[in-house]
Image (tube, rainbow, N blue to C red; front, side):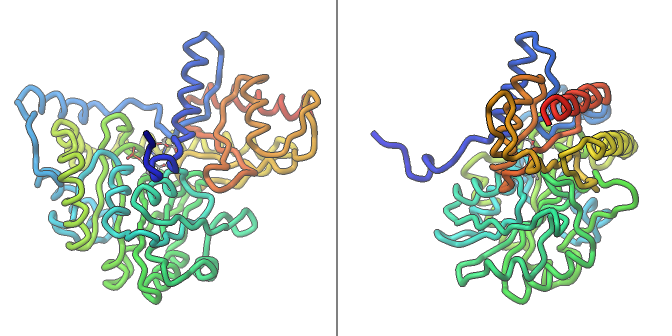
Length: 397
Ligand code: PMP
Ligand code: GLU
């Protein structure tokens, strides 16, 4: 008896498993600070919850169109037009069980075996695994702190082969918090058109941009880039709806149809009740989204200021999402209780064991020198956690 080669190659999500470890520590009564999963700590806004209750009470509990209800797909088209200047029809929208599901549908729809997908590093750890699941080959393209953790067409070009089928752009970015400017995206769009590549544009953090930074969708520049882009978005981050499982893709007709066909056999529609909630989220008052964004911005300012004062650690001010990306390579070669630090993961282990702070080591994000702190936790916990990280540094270095 043997598992498939494909299954054996897929690793479990370490963000989810480390988050589970932190939850267990809490359940065991440990006073832990968990800078772990990227999950808003806010409750889903009341009017969204009420729409779901109403859906249950009115019996909206049956299968819907596999790609989503027409009303929700139309509301998504309206949102894409108003927020992003993108014109889609409902037949170009596939509503799924979260952006994770939409991304997997997209890779299955566009990849043949051995097709390569360029993934700018640092990247969200699920991308390479999704590409493997779809039978493709994930190719990490390094960026690095000196380049502001962004890639340019020249960087991508170095990894281009005759098998390259697509590249991913994730702005605002998980895990760095980087947001690509209009000009940077325009250059990447021209590159995609020139080399006839698909673009998977993961815009799930679009509502979470700070100061005067603007979110731009790469699909919005011209007809050529629109024709080759699959826009991915969802409700988890902007509307604090992680548990509801609702996301969507917008794409040219043939791609959307292929994704819809795949989904029609794998899962059918996203939960009917959740779709009603999603409709209320998009068509209702957006003040709660703005209130959450403003609160995240305050946390961003605080955590960045604290981190930038701690010696030996390097940080860059995040412009979006809710992650602080910390370079710990200055600790390499130093020892704590006789154990030498050789990677950010070694430092993360000490933080858990001796300081009750759980962070995400970023080797699986294509960046072994870094840890990621999700600041989607209370201000009080951010302060407590930063006090502990500061103590870890002061105690040992
Ligand atoms: N894309 C990125 C960059 C993410 O960080 C996440 C994390 N949840 C997702 C997609 C998936 O979101 P969901 O499936 O909850 O919609
Ligand atoms: N995307 C979030 C994160 O990066 C949620 C966990 C996950 O799905 O990986 O923390």
